[in-house]
Length: 127
Image (cartoon, rainbow, N blue to C red; front, side):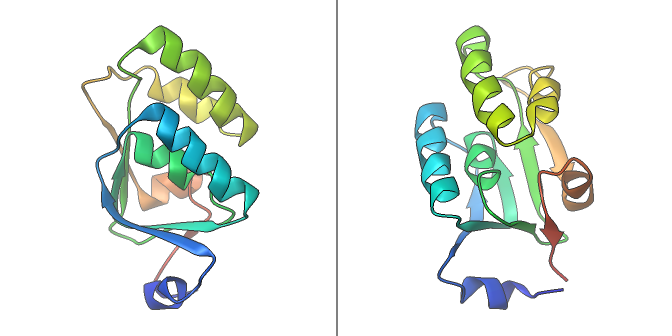
């Protein structure tokens, strides 16, 4: 098991200390770049909303024991669902996207590191 300091030193890792999200389209574009370049992603604390779209694109998706992911439906659920469904489906995580769209856009489904690993959102939990 690795430590956070090992990953911070890895030039092929995108480390997310804390993010409450952002723009759906920008997150998908960033995620595609992360995926195409086989960059690993690491969440040190919290990663909510569009941040999770970037995180799940990582080759290795690493969380700390205190990390939390937060998911919800898009503010425009019909348009967002179609865009997210394809994006998450390409990553083999369509089932998690379906669950996220059961949560209102102004609420958060909080997922701890263990649950994220069980859902295959995270591939590793740091010690």
